[in-house]
Amino acid sequence: MGFDTIIRNGTVVTAVDTYAADVAIANGKIAAIGKDLPAQNASAVIDAAGKLVIPGGIDVHTHLDMPFGGTTSADDFETGTRAAAFGGTTTLIDFAIQFKGQALRQAFDTWMKKASGKAVCDYAFHCIVTDVSGGQLSEMNDLVAEGITSFKLFMAYPGVFMLDDGSIFKALQTTSKNGGMVCMHAENGSAIDVIVQQALAEGKKAPKYHALTRPTTAEAEATARAIALAEMAGAPIYIVHLSCNDALEKVREARDRGLPVYAETCPQYLYLSIENFDAPGFEGAKYVFTPPLREKWHQEKLWNGLKRDHLQVVSTDHCPFCFKEQKELGKDDFTKIPNGGPGVEHRMSLIFSGGVAGGRFSANRFVELVSTTPAKLFGLYPRKGTIAVGSDADLVIFDPRRKHTISAKTHHMRVDYSMFEGIGVTGMPDIVFSRGRVVVEGEKSLGRPGQGEFLRRGTYAQVNG
Ligand code: URP
Ligand code: ZN
Ligand code: ZN
Image (cartoon, rainbow, N blue to C red; front, side, top):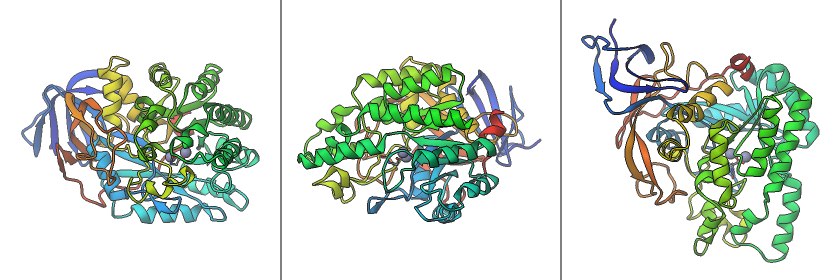
């Protein structure tokens, strides 16, 4: 049999195994895994000696080309997917937003247009549902049939994104029947809004007040309420961007009771803290996102949660706004700072570095957190998220020893600062394949806009039973 590419001499790492093998690619798929695969008919042979061969990363939480607070996130589907690929991430699940009064279909169509012809690697969508007063609950079933099998709901941002508990409960009853998944932004938005208004009235307008007006208790309360609503509806639930130990405890308790409750955290909550707001002048705006940064001691609790499977996924919540002109919209009032931070490029290296090189967990657990479990929870497995014959050849030749210092001067995201400026990591992608094509080789981007495909996903229930 002829192969397009053979990756020789690498160490294959999946969520469950680590072994020496060659990996052969044909027609965009993994065609064979074995010892000394015949190279005579292969078009290319790549030596991966000393390197890990891992499945491409799956980032299930990005916001490309997203309108927010009078501006739009700085990466579009071309620059965002290219930056993702530089970091070893080959699949993104972004969010199509239903604004109030709209049909869900309108959100889907709008975001398909944004991505079409631009993406360098594969992508899918969750649908953000902000209004279920029309026919949107039955539309959720239509979207599931079209491969949009998860829905983000907000318990924060009253008047913009927030849904009341009754609407959340109805949406959960819907996914309980159609097999999909609700992803929850869990913060008590009504209480937070009161605290925010009181802070503004006291003249507290600097960026750090964004964090100080969103207490961990507001996240823990909403997390517990979301879990209770899901339990009553008989539905699974996935808590997005979990930031603190208080909320983590609610997830852990629910999982201990055997409930299908899952949660992700993001690198910013593992590496940054409220101390970042000590940056001079208005620099703290670089760290304005929700939930906010917490006291430093939460970081180790979250790392431990990743190790012990109290947290199942690391995503980025990549939502970049340039410091100049975008974050500056809130120069005189923190509530006007567009919420979000850039991170899609560095997730894999930050988690490998802190997790595996840092001695907290195995390379298998790393793969599980950044690729395999995301694929399983969001209906992409086994097409994505593993290295197996027949799976898409989304592969990363990863150098576990290469060191890099993160900087806006060298990153590929279209944003003028890095949240992780100056942080050193150990472990970097060398070569990245998307469906068998090399999209990144060292510092070279070889991916073409438009070669990334929209992925129709299966449901949580189909993959997880
Ligand atoms: O501040 C954030 N996280 N911005 C993106 C929107 C969201 O809530 O995920
Ligand atoms: Zn959110
Ligand atoms: Zn988000």
